[in-house]
Length: 148
Image (cartoon, rainbow, N blue to C red; front, side, top):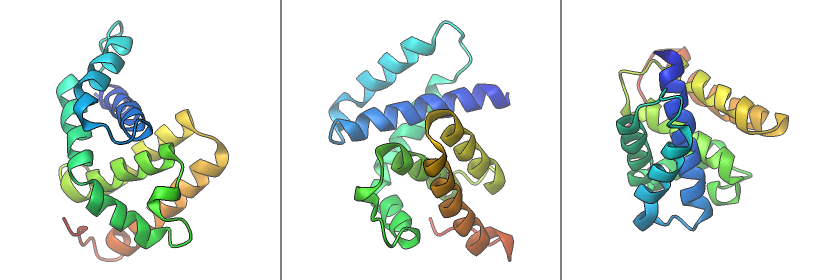
């Protein structure tokens, strides 16, 4: 099951990257999902409904997610971040805010694993630092949930 979800998150990251790279072209979102899913279909280890729901949720909440990211990246507003870093942070924060069934450490660890797979060391450290600060503020001390 974990690899199944991990692959689904990886495809979601690819979808969000292409969506952002193409100027947040929501009209073609299902094309991006279908195309990227077709590339991964041979192993069958992903959940298409999960990918669609996750990508759509991140896009629907993009403004609030970016505002939240900006709170932790004061020197680098979200629009200046690398697309991959921005997509990873949006995904992790979306899971923390809106997917209460996912334990916070799982959401953060999944984002860090994706950062290892898809980016270089500076990006990994950056994403880890931002998500670590969020975890420390919202979960480490008192287990209070993020504002939805």
